Length: 261
Image (cartoon, rainbow, N blue to C red; front, side, top):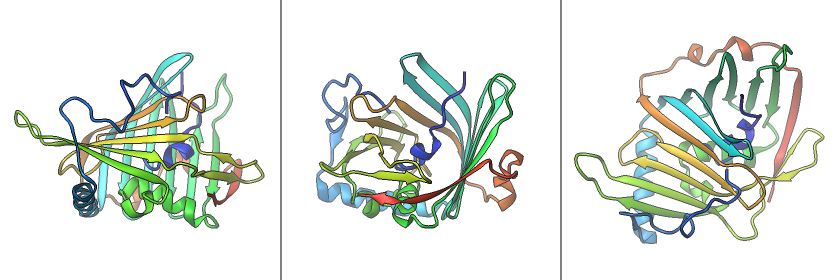
């Protein structure tokens, strides 16, 4: 079973969904062993993280994507490649089928395999006239705290290093009250992106997030968690982002209009 077409929403983080899960409290409360950092300390730590991320111009990682809905939990596995400032490739496999998504500059291309013998489909979304939407996509990938804080309240939690393991950080982005992120694609009616919370976990000093969870408001989506492992920071060439499934003529091209806030 393959996952449905989620990557555009997944990119708009942030970017790394639940119909809100059964938390013992809310995501902005400390978990076992964590301490919530005071605002000033959190800003300093986030500034250090942003600088640490910026020193890694390229990141490659194994990717596991899990979604939970009424049919249960579904998982796909693959890889993610990222090259600063704005090139991202995600390949995920379900059975023999591959889904491929590439963000390059202002263009997002998505390939989805067909079902029942139907051929796969290639879509293209142009963010050339949507600078705010594109900035939010990039902010989620590069941990641009200033850009993210326009739409989300940021809460940072820290679990100290223990037993040789590095300190662990959990960044919770909570949608600011009253903030809407309405995205228009082509001629489709705009819809408010459903994310109420985005939770990013990482080890202190790591080149990228360890996992990203996306949690929408109640009744507006399904749980989605992306987990990243086996990081490599070797240089990536343009050829590494090529994929034959993305190089054909897209069956549909959508001009993305900017976020309606």
